[in-house]
Length: 474
Image 1 (spheres, one colour):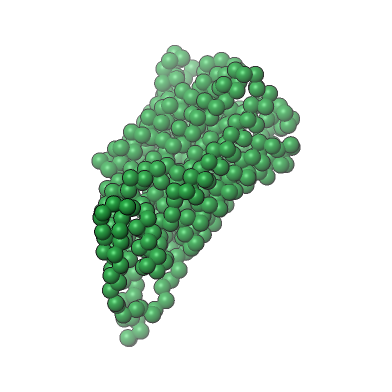
Image 2 (cartoon, rainbow, N blue to C red):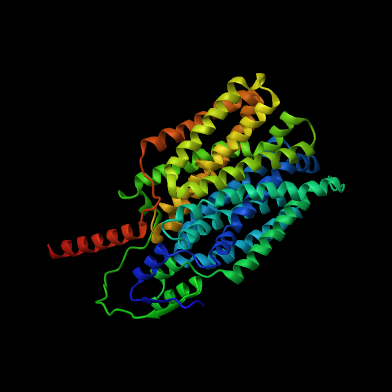
């Protein structure tokens, strides 16, 4: 523990300390551990994408069964996100972290050991539920241990984490392929995801505690002060101010509150960015190995190489936008990213048949870069940063729900249209999606970057209390 001593008199002191001070030395480690669910999500996504041909052959799947298998995890994640956001606001971030990782460990190993289509679908559904529960609480936690200046940057680290995990999948599978494990390559890959989930679970148990902001809003001042002390490695002196307690019962957070007059516009924008970026990515991203084979040549080795190559563009875009967040704001990042995506898809759609290999490769990479730099990152950041602590889990959960709605549409959209129109015309049709997201982002000028949302929440509560009192006095 360092020598810094902080006096806490009120819950607002805890919130102000988090907003105005840099994280502790272990702060970055805590953020990375919190993003473990994102790692597992992306890893499983990429490993299934690479191994889908093997799974289809081993289980003798029809096209409908393949579609069901790819979409069922998204359905589970949708349900997990929809209910998980409300649950994490009630029971806390830390308890949800433990519950979700246990589910992810069990389901990942279950997928790897599946013996028929039914067991494969069941465990992938449970894996989706675990991811849907985990991602909203992870992003909420990161927002609640980061100061106002770096909040957007730290939350946006989830995007490079996604692409790093997807690239890591290729690095795991590549040596297995050369060592002759091609027949059951997908099982080894998915099973390793279970090992990664187990390691992340152990790290969370060792290093993570409750979110200081959630504790300030839901625990006693004494308990919240202890959480702050442990998280920031400081000495906290409690000097509680005696105040007249407000006996009026505060309303419990509910999903309907993010659609209230104060929040409905930002909820609409967050929903549009989350869903459109998800459609554009999952329509293309899941089929990166397939697209790589179409570009480079037949064989699973080309799918693996393409996964490594194109996800590198995602890592670069994700890291670049994270460091640019505090300077540009997440709205401008989304606008720039949407523009890049539209240009790449439009060019591929109109000229793809006549483009040289290197330019086609750069345009697909440019699509991934633009997505990662802009809407891909901001789809979840808007939903996480637009609400105060009391509603952050609900808001982030709703954003993740919209992501999963978009992913289901993307999963279903791309293979059907691809079979009817071919690759380049499909990409041309897909341009409509980021264009719609771009129009909405240009029209709604909301950007939560560098805004003290917690202060906004307190003003809302004080206004509500005064309104109730005035009504009672009439």
